[in-house]
Image 1 (cartoon, helix red, strand yellow):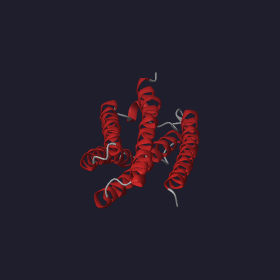
Image 2 (cartoon, helix red, strand yellow):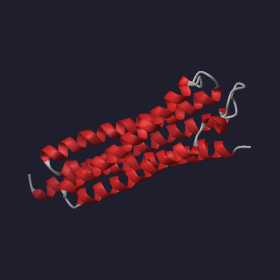
Image 3 (tube, rainbow, N blue to C red):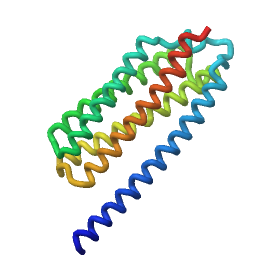
Image 4 (cartoon, rainbow, N blue to C red):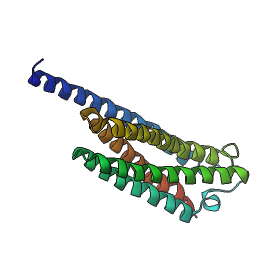
Length: 198
């Protein structure tokens, strides 16, 4: 097989992979839009219990937000290093990203645990059901991203930065940035607006 034909096949495969990835991102956008719409409808449905202003600590959530935004920055540095085929920096920056993402996820689980232990579980009201579903779905995506990141770090460590690894790392970076954007909406719509609601 000639080099030109091989290059053409790789380009076509890359285009298909990128298209498939963007289709997935669009379906995720629809999923999160539905969850945001559900939360918007149910956020005042507290069944006589506490609302967002009574339950959420903005200081705590601000730390979560800073962790995730910092992880987005370090993820970007990792992807840039991958394009330069700098294996050492790719592993270092993705390790930092992984730890920041893990810390974020730990804080989210801690918040959920505290709410449930205080009697404010997803079964207590429509508001809490919508809250746990929206924020929990984002947390599941973070977990999937961390798993993907861990697998890619092992592959890069063992095989180096071969062509398919760089492509997958770029897609991973896009996915991680997408989750950061979703979190900005969650922070603004759920926590910030909930805290300042009159």
